[in-house]
Image 1 (cartoon, rainbow over the protein chains, first blue to last red):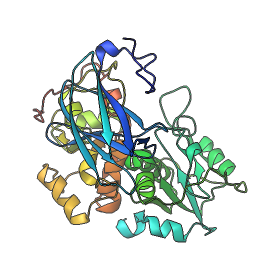
Image 2 (image 1 turned 60 degrees about the vertical axis):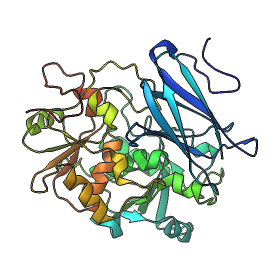
Image 3 (image 1 turned 45 degrees about the horizontal axis):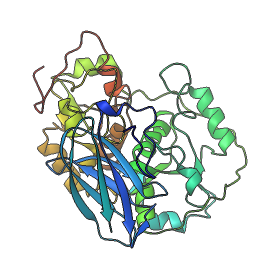
Image 4 (image 1 turned 90 degrees about the vertical axis):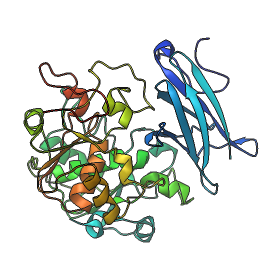
Length: 98
Length: 282
């Protein structure tokens, strides 16, 4: 596979084989949420990174191999936590529903 | 400095949207954020093009900074209120930068753009117009800027605070995890540096924790308040956030930001590097 997945963010120019990618989309009631913030927490719960979602609700992290937690914050929604396992050379897809 | 002089709330900013003494400035890592909507009346500074020399790795010089602020309509007696994404990383960097060039009245919007968005406060794409000014900067204040030689000299002698995530500190990651990881520099941290991720100082919505909580976090991490402190991260923006906490919120003296940070240190020949979760020996 050459990277970018259905409707997601482009991976052009990134060597996916060297990265442990976590990406996905935030939706609410079936609609993409373009003004959410997704935080990446490490296995101890410590903050590692945060990104705002794109207009289509997409987000991406370049993590390391292992267990991670995604915490999603959005206006007028309670935070949602989802766990995910990342591995080098693999794109882990996560769907977040608020 | 103190919380009262260095920080303003979102409510304060809403009350001062039409105050001619106040200039709102948005500074983001993602330099396209401003165009997608910003606080009404806010102007934008681009940290990559406006604040950095475009050839050497350094800041714009005094004359360039004067020309920049004059062109954007900022004068010496304006109250500058900075805000941005990434929990104010780059806004804190700009805050430190304004202090470096001697701007007197500069403040940070607590929580930055994220808190503003999560509160569903108004954003606009209308561009403000401002009269040009004649801005005069001071010489750089090197009492708040650390260079590599004093960082090496501080190993085992002063407080070094590595504000990156634990995985970057240990050498398991080379950059914040929203960026690709392939980098030229070696992984690890400066020996004897305490790891206090910048994020420990902030709540989930990006606002700063209370002074008591902040003091406790750095004390427990081993910061010796009787010593001078140098904060660093990867390129000097997250450590501006921690510099802001230590110097401007907690009022500590002798706190410097090492803007060369890991991208410089991790590329130096002949300096010690520690790997793993322990601080390492001097």
